[in-house]
Image 1 (tube, helix red, strand yellow):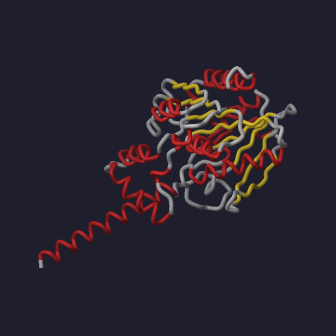
Image 2 (cartoon, helix red, strand yellow):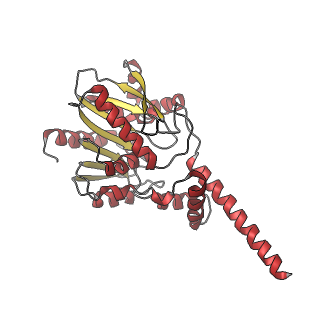
Amino acid sequence: MSGVVTLAVILVILALLFILSWMLASYAVHGARYTPEETWKDQCGQNPEVKDLAGVQTVSYEIRDEEGYTLHAVYYPNDTASKKFLIMVHGYTLNRNGELKYMPMYRRLGYNCIVYDHRGHGLNRPVPCTFGIKESRDLMAVIRDTYERYGSDIYLGLTGESLGAATEITALKYHPQVHFIVNDCGFADLIPVEKDGLKGMHLPPFLVYPADLACRIVYHFAFTAARPIDSLKDNKIPICFIHGDADTFINCDHSVRMSRATAGYQELHLVPGAAHAKSINTDPAKYEEIVDRFVRGVESGEIA
């Protein structure tokens, strides 16, 4: 009889473990999203120049990815006619407005800017976040659409923060036709980020692996497959990595590792005292100086 009791206890423990793992996986892929209105207000608070963007005659449109999924995008034309374009990729739980704090400095560099909502974010249909796996293919659809919409002769760059930065790097395996990437506080590998998150919830880090299994069963992708760093081995696109050295959400070591992994030109800038996605807020003048020098260097051919 004791054997039956032992088996029953084991089955109950396994069932509870799976339930907890499913809850953790669900929490990860369905994190509460901010509305565009909430994000606009937040971005105005982070950078007063964002308010001026309300006067830009924007154009909203939709893009279909390879699966037929609809992405909502907004085009911010520069005040001066220009063939320079920038696709800006936002972070997890935010939306296209999440990149607006960066936009004024790129407009000063003469760029027309395109922002869009990640799948499952903003105005897009609710779906799970896949941490760059499907998002990178969505980005490729935005890149293709940008060339089709604005001309094959445009000069195109990418910038993104956090999940957006990881998405840019993951997309490199598809060899996008872009001239440069500015990469702010992206992750090299999702698993360490998830482990740190579990520690913050006072849960044992090993739970990331049963949560990964639950994610495979329920959502049909693996946390362990979210490894942007693997896309850098044959990359030739110049990348400027920026990361706050006080980032406790995605440790700056992720950018250090990626800067060492890329086969192309790279710069690494660790911003003293900056928390996650706060490098531009911590030292705005230095941040713009870094971006300005890098982008102009690529444009002139000094950086290749």
